[in-house]
Image (cartoon, rainbow, N blue to C red; front, side, top):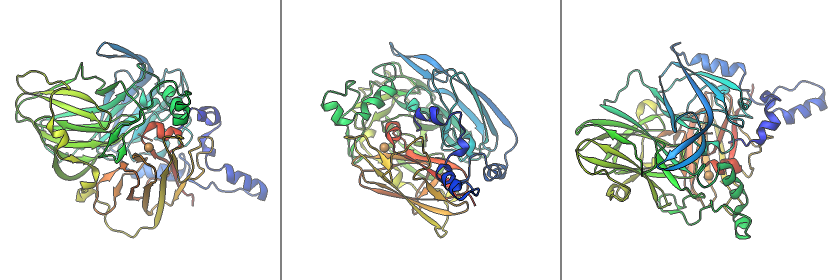
Length: 501
Ligand code: C2O
Ligand code: CU
């Protein structure tokens, strides 16, 4: 996510110039106007794509105020930044309707809001330096776009490591013709928390940027860097950052949320990982989960005991409830700690993090086993363009990069991946590092090659590759990055740009 550098270099200068810097120099040399190389966020193709979404015209308006606040973590008070409660109040809208969200920035810093997972109009994607100027302190910005696709989404800023504060919330786009039947629906947002307790995210980023060398020579002071977080499911090193708390819906295990229902009722649980450096292994003690959606899109339903969720990923699951009080646990993968909520349908002592949850170590679902529902499968078609995103870097130097280049917010289009509108694209994500990364593409929901699930964020294990297919049908400039916020900020980010014709 773009660092605060961008606010000084791009904020008031105009983001339209993005990508034309090098060409402007060429144009000067030849004394003839040179067309921009990439479609800009405010160009005609972006407007046309929005019109093609054929919305209902109905508008849902929300106000989001980003401000300093305090979060009570069972007795520990954390000074943080949020949109009111943590998570923000869930935004609900019906697919086809227009979301009008007015963001007031009462923070002492620039911010923005990114609508994670949505194929929306590019100028509303919330990426300063690529799609808009940052929203300065004291300023307002109104996001307005058609919400075309039902599903479980979320929102967060795209400025520095602000995502690792309390600035996040769920965005649920309801299907006017919902095919699933269920009695209750719960939104479960997972998070790793340190802000205002052990450090701020900016301090953590600074510490990590010092690398392990800095730490060993005594330069790294904070002790927020974590070593030895191991997970077989994640192929080794599980994370870089030590968190004092793991939260479900903003609450620690000592003060858990209780979901109340009745035995036999069927519940749809929308799981969202809003963490910054933690994958969660989620299970509901005494129950099996039926996974129905990956990142908002339907899959052929699969039963499992637990599910692994990387940062930015979402899974929807259906559960038929038993009688009693059950732990809904999110184990911080490789970090020896847990987030907890309680599901109560009858009597019984409330479970704690000490309650055994054997489901956590039975079958754990990951995306590879999923198959897209036929109605959202992309179908066979020749691939027009093949792109590669090679992930590199190490914890030692904290030099995370894509295709050998660390993202430079002052020159965001350097190393951009180009596509032309209308193409079927294959993107090969190659992880050449010794650590897993949750790779995220904005503005598109690709399909894992073969019959795999539709997704916008995917775990790529160390030394492995993931090949995905998408249709280039949403023109603009789209960030693509690791959803470990510290990796993204250190440079594991690039832009997918539609070339201008
Ligand atoms: Cu959750 Cu760039 O995104
Ligand atoms: Cu990463």
